[in-house]
Length: 113
Length: 113
Image 1 (spheres, helix red, strand yellow):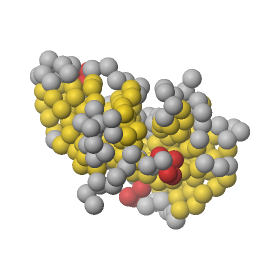
Image 2 (cartoon, each protein chain N blue to C red):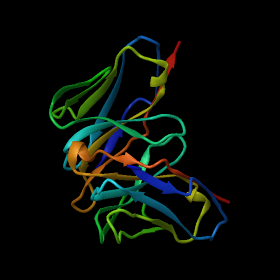
Image 3 (cartoon, chains in turn green, cyan):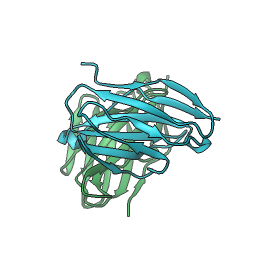
């Protein structure tokens, strides 16, 4: 079966560091993606980890441990504009043979001044 | 490039009416998908296509039909609208790279009365 867990809400202050954790169970796992969605907007791609370890892109980093079925998104030097929902999305195979992303309910990050 | 475009942006239907949500992409992506997002929830896959002439069901396909006659277009048809189909609908296109990185359209906000 498929399951996905991430915290529903996280609050932090401007300039701080925040970590959003994600645990997953996915058939035919290929890798883990992260997406950002501002209120009223469309999701946008942040990162993808196919291999274990840390991937860094500017202020954002993403980590994957395949053996633990666990990943996290690390946001540094938080800015007000980082207030948004963040979705982890494992890439796997569910119905048929096509690879598909599974999106959880997301984590609402609120950055306070 | 316009990316992924969706029309209409907003739509109100009465129960039992049918309509087609339009989606087009100009990036020559082979994969296209339709998701729905209900308040406070993640994205759920309705239908997807891995190429022109090929479609398959996602997690929540009931009440929806799709077709893919060209690479560019992937319309979603609501056969007989129900209040449970009130949602925001996102179309996305992708290649197989970067974890099937999804490029989302701006969304269609549908209300069924």
